Image 1: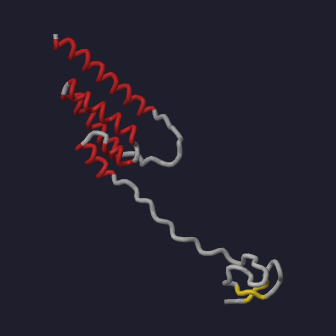
Image 2: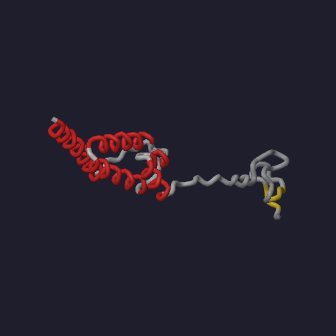
Length: 137
């Protein structure tokens, strides 16, 4: 502990003091309180959740709308035919295990690979509906 001059009133003050006892000028900043660490998501847990319930891994990561869309797509894929359902389910599990959790930023990034995946999914569902109508007759 050393004595320093207060920048405001020039009196001798301890270097450890929070403020000058004479004038109240802040000498040192209080130590910051420890911040609770934010737990991140586990890719294995996300994949397992999406294996059991399609889209649950995305919801676990904080991507609720994404998870609900995957749930609907996979269920529709299974209703149409078993193969589109399995393929969509695999994409859902892979999507849950990769990427990152939802951030606080509202930034929307479009990825070409994601766009191609969406187009493939739409094409698979459309083909499944057409085949269901042709075979169902």
